[in-house]
Length: 62
Image 1 (cartoon, rainbow, N blue to C red):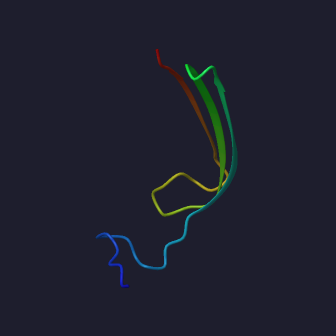
Image 2 (cartoon, rainbow, N blue to C red; image 1 turned 120 degrees about the vertical axis):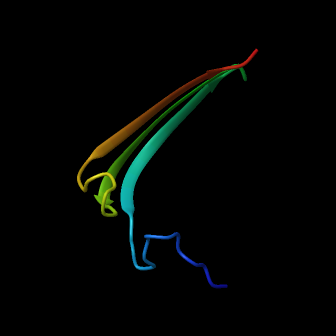
């Protein structure tokens, strides 16, 4: 299979990050998640190397 890159992106671009995440739910009604990532290698114009990202999510269903 051959994949053609999106315009402006070369085939040899690499993105690398490391991270961890936690997910917790309570009685099928409440979901909480927290994710952390550290950028190891980035694309030009993207998030700079060495930066950290945190994502928090809270979801309630009834």
